[in-house]
Amino acid sequence: MKIYYNANIFAPDHPGSTAFVVDHGRFIAFGTDEDILNGFSNTVQQINLNRKTIWPGLTDAHVHLHHLANSMAMVDCETDSLDACLERIRQAAVRLPANAWVRGHGWNQNRWESGYGTAAMLDQVCDGRPAYLTAKSLHAAWANSQALNLAGITQSTPDPPDGALQRDQQGRLTGILFESGGMALVERVIPPDSHAEVTSKIKSLIPSLWQHGLVGVHDFDGIQCWKALQELYQKGELQIRVRKNVPRDLIDTFIEAGYRTDHGDDWLNIGGIKLFADGALGPQTAAMLTPYENTETAGTLLMNQAEIEEIGKFASSNGFALAIHAIGDLANHVVLNAYQTIRLFEQTKNLPHYRHRIEHVQIIDPKDLPRLAQLQIIASVQPVHAPSDMEMADKYLGSRAQNAYAYQAMLDSDAELVCGSDAPVEPINPFQGIHAAITRRKINGQPGENGWYPEQRLTLQDALAGFSSKPAEISNRGSWLGKIATGYKADFIILQEDPFTIDPHYVAEIRPIATFAEGKRVYLSETADADY
Image (cartoon, rainbow, N blue to C red):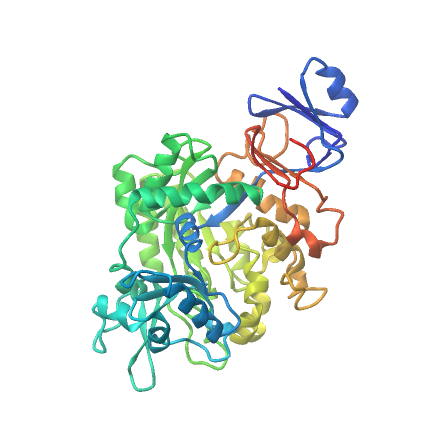
């Protein structure tokens, strides 16, 4: 049993409390310092927090653990110019064995004045090594000639289903591959990590999550990640709460194995079946009701309404919720139409009312906005996308950008909102996500004091809920996880600053002093002034 006192505690259920007690991994009492110190006077461990702030442990509701772990070993391609990216690749390539693959992540052609790179450009800096670099959006990749050759891709290779191969004005391949279908052509020939390597990478990633105050994530990667998580769990080495969502191609495998949504415990459990309704805004593959500005393209639907309904009915009948990626307003419209049919099917068949989700909900027609609440569909959003994408959104959407990343409008329509990062697409740091949600500004302050479409700013309390209590609630664990309250598991972080009293712009700079999961300290900053 431990007493923590002289604290600034964010515990709306216990107003005025400055002290709390943790026993057997749970919060068991709150009150004033006098109440707690007198009421538990025999407790040996009494920790003076010197008015530091206590927040609930945070959860990222949309992350790609395997991709994130891999990205830490890749070339960082998120640069302001194409030349700078090529130079980083050159420096990395010369340190690799002659036949090793050059891997990188994070490039964004929208930030480069010259636009997309080419296979020939990579050839010049990779010295014969195959190269494969994923875009920041994870919806495109850039390969060099050696990689294309190893994949058997030639000028006569047709566009694959669910993807495309970019060609220049002469019809020649450029080395840019779009969406899962195009990217898979090269990914299938890249030597995969062994199970031991994947497990080691994910295990090594976990301490960096603690450093950001994260005690949980909702993951969206594939079978290798799932196997690694199970091994870490079995060995008692997971130490981060994971809700594992299931890729579409694994649905039969998981059903036959007896899994269902919510199967598992508080450390490792099953979420929903992940589907993709469209692409991404960056490569203009997000499906729109009308074409992008100054173009004739409106993106691409990867699944139509009938296909979503068929899979949704099958999933619901076999105990699974859905989590559907939808970015464009057409994609969100189609997904909501499908969910309406699926809800009726669940009712008719007397099935559970599943906590279905839409991942991203980046651009939604105002007419569709109320349907999220009407159908009780969870809006799983990534606030950091808003300032990150704002120039791109203004360029491609024009006045429609006012309906993009409309987080406050979603809450105003009574939609249930959970927040994540989409890491490694964006930084995993939840304080950057909270900053983006409450300011609609980049870290450098752009586009100004009020932010981008400031009417869509969230309150700090709502943003915090999106990263703490709401992910627990939609996982059907909201009665004992995600809050600082009596009886809840003691997941909490210690902060030097009180985010509610500082300039909102500086919230992005907050770094936890310590992180606790079920009362156990899993992280302590090197700069901490006490041993908590």
